[in-house]
Length: 291
Image (cartoon, rainbow, N blue to C red):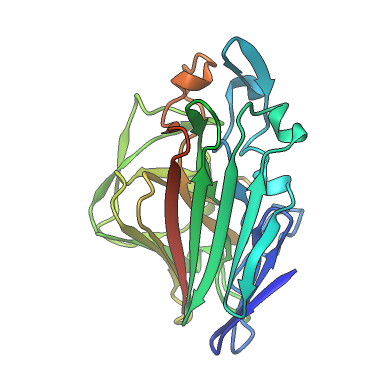
Protein backbone atom coordinates (compact mmCIF):
# COMPACT_ATOMS: atom_id res chain seq x y z
CA UNK A 1 0.00 0.00 0.00
CA UNK A 2 1.31 3.44 -0.98
CA UNK A 3 0.92 6.37 1.43
CA UNK A 4 0.88 10.03 0.36
CA UNK A 5 0.72 12.66 3.04
CA UNK A 6 0.75 16.39 3.66
CA UNK A 7 -0.35 18.54 6.59
CA UNK A 8 -4.03 18.21 5.61
CA UNK A 9 -4.60 14.74 4.16
CA UNK A 10 -3.35 11.16 4.31
CA UNK A 11 -3.99 9.12 1.16
CA UNK A 12 -3.66 5.36 0.59
CA UNK A 13 -3.31 3.85 -2.88
CA UNK A 14 -3.15 0.16 -3.69
CA UNK A 15 -0.70 -0.97 -6.38
CA UNK A 16 -3.34 -3.55 -7.32
CA UNK A 17 -5.51 -1.60 -9.73
CA UNK A 18 -3.71 1.66 -8.83
CA UNK A 19 -6.84 2.13 -6.72
CA UNK A 20 -7.37 4.98 -4.29
CA UNK A 21 -8.53 3.28 -1.09
CA UNK A 22 -8.51 5.94 1.63
CA UNK A 23 -8.40 9.69 2.17
CA UNK A 24 -8.45 10.95 5.74
CA UNK A 25 -8.16 14.50 6.98
CA UNK A 26 -6.29 15.65 10.09
CA UNK A 27 -9.30 14.71 12.22
CA UNK A 28 -9.31 11.17 10.76
CA UNK A 29 -12.55 11.67 8.82
CA UNK A 30 -12.63 9.00 6.10
CA UNK A 31 -13.93 10.31 2.79
CA UNK A 32 -13.56 7.21 0.60
CA UNK A 33 -16.03 4.33 0.60
CA UNK A 34 -14.46 1.39 2.44
CA UNK A 35 -15.58 -1.39 0.11
CA UNK A 36 -18.15 -3.19 2.25
CA UNK A 37 -18.86 -6.18 -0.05
CA UNK A 38 -22.50 -6.34 1.00
CA UNK A 39 -22.96 -3.12 -1.01
CA UNK A 40 -19.96 -2.75 -3.37
CA UNK A 41 -16.55 -4.35 -2.93
CA UNK A 42 -14.45 -1.57 -4.46
CA UNK A 43 -13.23 1.89 -3.46
CA UNK A 44 -12.30 3.83 -6.59
CA UNK A 45 -11.43 1.55 -9.52
CA UNK A 46 -9.81 2.71 -12.74
CA UNK A 47 -11.83 1.83 -15.84
CA UNK A 48 -9.76 0.76 -18.87
CA UNK A 49 -9.92 -0.08 -21.76
CA UNK A 50 -13.72 0.12 -21.59
CA UNK A 51 -16.24 2.03 -19.49
CA UNK A 52 -19.39 0.18 -18.55
CA UNK A 53 -20.48 -3.01 -20.24
CA UNK A 54 -20.13 -4.41 -23.74
CA UNK A 55 -23.07 -6.03 -25.51
CA UNK A 56 -23.01 -9.64 -24.26
CA UNK A 57 -19.59 -8.86 -22.72
CA UNK A 58 -17.93 -9.25 -26.11
CA UNK A 59 -16.75 -7.33 -29.16
CA UNK A 60 -15.18 -7.95 -32.56
CA UNK A 61 -12.06 -6.34 -33.97
CA UNK A 62 -10.52 -7.18 -37.36
CA UNK A 63 -12.71 -10.25 -37.58
CA UNK A 64 -11.64 -11.65 -34.21
CA UNK A 65 -14.04 -12.06 -31.29
CA UNK A 66 -12.96 -11.01 -27.77
CA UNK A 67 -14.57 -11.33 -24.35
CA UNK A 68 -14.25 -8.56 -21.74
CA UNK A 69 -16.18 -7.96 -18.55
CA UNK A 70 -17.61 -4.67 -17.29
CA UNK A 71 -15.20 -1.72 -16.97
CA UNK A 72 -12.25 -3.64 -18.43
CA UNK A 73 -9.24 -5.21 -16.77
CA UNK A 74 -7.06 -2.41 -15.34
CA UNK A 75 -8.85 -2.47 -11.99
CA UNK A 76 -7.73 -6.10 -11.52
CA UNK A 77 -4.09 -5.71 -12.60
CA UNK A 78 -1.03 -4.89 -10.52
CA UNK A 79 0.57 -1.59 -11.53
CA UNK A 80 4.28 -0.87 -11.21
CA UNK A 81 5.41 2.14 -9.18
CA UNK A 82 7.52 4.30 -11.52
CA UNK A 83 8.28 7.15 -9.16
CA UNK A 84 7.16 8.23 -5.72
CA UNK A 85 7.78 10.89 -3.12
CA UNK A 86 5.94 12.04 -0.01
CA UNK A 87 3.05 13.69 -1.82
CA UNK A 88 2.90 12.08 -5.29
CA UNK A 89 3.21 8.75 -7.07
CA UNK A 90 3.12 7.56 -10.67
CA UNK A 91 2.03 4.00 -11.45
CA UNK A 92 2.35 2.17 -14.77
CA UNK A 93 0.40 -0.66 -16.39
CA UNK A 94 1.48 -2.20 -19.70
CA UNK A 95 0.11 -4.98 -21.87
CA UNK A 96 0.79 -8.63 -21.15
CA UNK A 97 -0.12 -11.99 -22.66
CA UNK A 98 -3.15 -11.93 -20.37
CA UNK A 99 -4.39 -8.54 -21.60
CA UNK A 100 -3.57 -9.23 -25.27
CA UNK A 101 -5.86 -12.25 -25.14
CA UNK A 102 -8.86 -9.98 -24.51
CA UNK A 103 -7.63 -6.61 -25.87
CA UNK A 104 -5.44 -6.79 -29.00
CA UNK A 105 -3.41 -3.64 -28.39
CA UNK A 106 -0.13 -2.91 -26.70
CA UNK A 107 -0.44 0.08 -24.38
CA UNK A 108 1.08 2.10 -21.58
CA UNK A 109 -1.30 3.48 -18.96
CA UNK A 110 0.19 5.81 -16.38
CA UNK A 111 -1.73 7.12 -13.39
CA UNK A 112 -0.33 9.93 -11.25
CA UNK A 113 -1.73 10.94 -7.87
CA UNK A 114 -0.52 14.25 -6.48
CA UNK A 115 -1.49 15.90 -3.20
CA UNK A 116 -1.72 19.69 -3.29
CA UNK A 117 -3.06 21.17 -0.04
CA UNK A 118 -6.65 19.85 0.34
CA UNK A 119 -6.76 18.48 -3.21
CA UNK A 120 -5.79 15.18 -4.83
CA UNK A 121 -4.95 15.54 -8.52
CA UNK A 122 -5.33 12.44 -10.66
CA UNK A 123 -3.70 12.40 -14.09
CA UNK A 124 -3.83 9.71 -16.77
CA UNK A 125 -1.42 9.26 -19.66
CA UNK A 126 -2.16 6.65 -22.33
CA UNK A 127 0.55 5.86 -24.90
CA UNK A 128 0.01 3.95 -28.14
CA UNK A 129 3.16 1.93 -28.99
CA UNK A 130 1.38 -0.08 -31.71
CA UNK A 131 1.86 0.11 -35.46
CA UNK A 132 -1.82 0.96 -35.90
CA UNK A 133 -4.50 3.16 -34.35
CA UNK A 134 -5.41 2.21 -30.78
CA UNK A 135 -9.01 2.19 -29.54
CA UNK A 136 -9.90 2.57 -25.87
CA UNK A 137 -12.11 4.12 -23.22
CA UNK A 138 -11.00 5.38 -19.82
CA UNK A 139 -12.70 6.28 -16.59
CA UNK A 140 -12.46 6.73 -12.84
CA UNK A 141 -14.99 5.46 -10.30
CA UNK A 142 -14.29 7.03 -6.86
CA UNK A 143 -16.83 6.26 -4.15
CA UNK A 144 -17.47 8.64 -1.25
CA UNK A 145 -19.08 8.02 2.12
CA UNK A 146 -22.60 9.50 2.39
CA UNK A 147 -23.21 11.40 4.54
CA UNK A 148 -19.76 12.46 5.71
CA UNK A 149 -20.43 12.33 9.42
CA UNK A 150 -19.72 10.04 12.35
CA UNK A 151 -22.91 11.19 14.06
CA UNK A 152 -25.52 9.23 12.13
CA UNK A 153 -27.49 10.91 9.41
CA UNK A 154 -29.10 9.58 6.26
CA UNK A 155 -28.36 9.34 2.55
CA UNK A 156 -31.09 11.91 1.95
CA UNK A 157 -29.18 14.47 4.04
CA UNK A 158 -26.70 14.83 1.18
CA UNK A 159 -26.95 16.67 -2.12
CA UNK A 160 -25.14 17.22 -5.40
CA UNK A 161 -24.30 20.68 -6.69
CA UNK A 162 -22.82 21.19 -10.16
CA UNK A 163 -20.92 24.17 -11.56
CA UNK A 164 -21.63 25.69 -13.96
CA UNK A 165 -25.28 25.73 -12.91
CA UNK A 166 -27.47 24.87 -15.90
CA UNK A 167 -29.65 22.23 -17.50
CA UNK A 168 -27.45 19.33 -18.56
CA UNK A 169 -28.02 16.87 -21.35
CA UNK A 170 -28.46 13.48 -19.73
CA UNK A 171 -27.80 10.20 -21.48
CA UNK A 172 -30.24 7.62 -20.13
CA UNK A 173 -29.22 4.07 -19.40
CA UNK A 174 -31.31 1.07 -20.27
CA UNK A 175 -29.28 -1.04 -17.88
CA UNK A 176 -26.59 -1.88 -18.51
CA UNK A 177 -26.46 -0.08 -21.88
CA UNK A 178 -26.51 3.59 -22.81
CA UNK A 179 -29.09 5.20 -25.07
CA UNK A 180 -27.67 8.45 -26.50
CA UNK A 181 -30.40 8.43 -29.16
CA UNK A 182 -32.95 9.31 -26.45
CA UNK A 183 -31.33 12.21 -24.54
CA UNK A 184 -33.05 13.83 -21.57
CA UNK A 185 -32.25 16.92 -19.55
CA UNK A 186 -31.48 17.33 -15.87
CA UNK A 187 -31.96 20.72 -14.23
CA UNK A 188 -28.90 21.39 -12.09
CA UNK A 189 -29.41 25.10 -11.61
CA UNK A 190 -30.22 24.13 -8.02
CA UNK A 191 -28.78 21.44 -5.72
CA UNK A 192 -30.01 17.90 -6.33
CA UNK A 193 -31.01 16.22 -3.06
CA UNK A 194 -29.92 12.59 -3.01
CA UNK A 195 -32.32 9.71 -2.63
CA UNK A 196 -31.84 6.11 -3.62
CA UNK A 197 -34.63 6.19 -6.21
CA UNK A 198 -32.54 8.56 -8.34
CA UNK A 199 -30.52 5.51 -9.33
CA UNK A 200 -33.31 3.06 -10.12
CA UNK A 201 -32.16 3.07 -13.76
CA UNK A 202 -28.46 2.92 -12.90
CA UNK A 203 -26.15 5.96 -13.03
CA UNK A 204 -27.13 9.52 -13.90
CA UNK A 205 -24.91 10.25 -16.91
CA UNK A 206 -24.31 13.88 -17.84
CA UNK A 207 -22.90 15.02 -21.16
CA UNK A 208 -20.29 17.67 -20.29
CA UNK A 209 -19.06 18.26 -23.81
CA UNK A 210 -15.49 18.13 -22.50
CA UNK A 211 -16.01 21.39 -20.62
CA UNK A 212 -14.50 21.96 -17.19
CA UNK A 213 -17.15 21.02 -14.64
CA UNK A 214 -17.19 20.64 -10.86
CA UNK A 215 -19.52 18.18 -9.13
CA UNK A 216 -19.78 18.73 -5.39
CA UNK A 217 -21.13 16.24 -2.87
CA UNK A 218 -22.07 17.83 0.45
CA UNK A 219 -24.68 17.47 3.20
CA UNK A 220 -26.94 19.48 5.48
CA UNK A 221 -25.47 18.05 8.70
CA UNK A 222 -22.00 19.60 8.62
CA UNK A 223 -19.55 21.40 6.37
CA UNK A 224 -17.74 18.31 5.06
CA UNK A 225 -17.83 17.16 1.47
CA UNK A 226 -15.91 16.65 -1.74
CA UNK A 227 -15.70 18.57 -5.00
CA UNK A 228 -14.69 16.65 -8.11
CA UNK A 229 -13.45 18.83 -10.95
CA UNK A 230 -13.34 17.30 -14.42
CA UNK A 231 -11.13 19.15 -16.86
CA UNK A 232 -11.66 17.43 -20.20
CA UNK A 233 -14.00 14.51 -19.55
CA UNK A 234 -16.92 14.31 -21.98
CA UNK A 235 -19.14 12.55 -19.42
CA UNK A 236 -19.66 12.15 -15.70
CA UNK A 237 -21.59 9.37 -14.04
CA UNK A 238 -23.22 9.80 -10.62
CA UNK A 239 -24.07 6.44 -9.10
CA UNK A 240 -25.12 4.53 -6.03
CA UNK A 241 -26.31 0.90 -6.20
CA UNK A 242 -30.08 0.43 -6.33
CA UNK A 243 -32.17 -1.03 -4.70
CA UNK A 244 -29.52 -1.42 -2.02
CA UNK A 245 -29.66 1.37 0.55
CA UNK A 246 -25.93 1.96 0.19
CA UNK A 247 -24.29 4.72 2.29
CA UNK A 248 -22.06 6.00 -0.50
CA UNK A 249 -22.16 7.68 -3.89
CA UNK A 250 -19.72 7.74 -6.78
CA UNK A 251 -18.77 10.70 -8.98
CA UNK A 252 -17.20 9.18 -12.08
CA UNK A 253 -15.20 11.02 -14.76
CA UNK A 254 -15.63 9.11 -18.02
CA UNK A 255 -13.80 9.29 -21.33
CA UNK A 256 -16.14 6.75 -22.89
CA UNK A 257 -19.53 5.08 -22.38
CA UNK A 258 -21.12 1.67 -22.09
CA UNK A 259 -22.19 0.08 -25.35
CA UNK A 260 -25.34 1.58 -26.77
CA UNK A 261 -28.59 -0.37 -26.87
CA UNK A 262 -28.16 -0.82 -30.64
CA UNK A 263 -24.38 -1.43 -30.69
CA UNK A 264 -23.26 -3.74 -33.51
CA UNK A 265 -20.41 -5.26 -31.50
CA UNK A 266 -17.67 -3.89 -33.77
CA UNK A 267 -15.07 -2.21 -31.57
CA UNK A 268 -14.19 0.38 -34.20
CA UNK A 269 -17.87 1.45 -34.30
CA UNK A 270 -18.23 1.74 -30.52
CA UNK A 271 -19.95 4.98 -29.48
CA UNK A 272 -17.63 7.51 -27.78
CA UNK A 273 -14.50 5.37 -28.27
CA UNK A 274 -11.16 7.19 -28.17
CA UNK A 275 -8.80 6.80 -31.14
CA UNK A 276 -5.09 7.25 -30.58
CA UNK A 277 -2.65 7.37 -33.48
CA UNK A 278 0.65 5.50 -33.53
CA UNK A 279 3.13 6.74 -30.91
CA UNK A 280 0.68 9.42 -29.78
CA UNK A 281 -0.40 10.14 -26.21
CA UNK A 282 -3.76 10.82 -24.59
CA UNK A 283 -3.90 12.94 -21.44
CA UNK A 284 -6.79 13.19 -19.01
CA UNK A 285 -7.10 14.72 -15.56
CA UNK A 286 -9.50 15.30 -12.72
CA UNK A 287 -9.08 16.36 -9.12
CA UNK A 288 -10.88 15.87 -5.83
CA UNK A 289 -10.95 18.60 -3.21
CA UNK A 290 -11.81 17.49 0.33
CA UNK A 291 -13.42 19.81 2.86
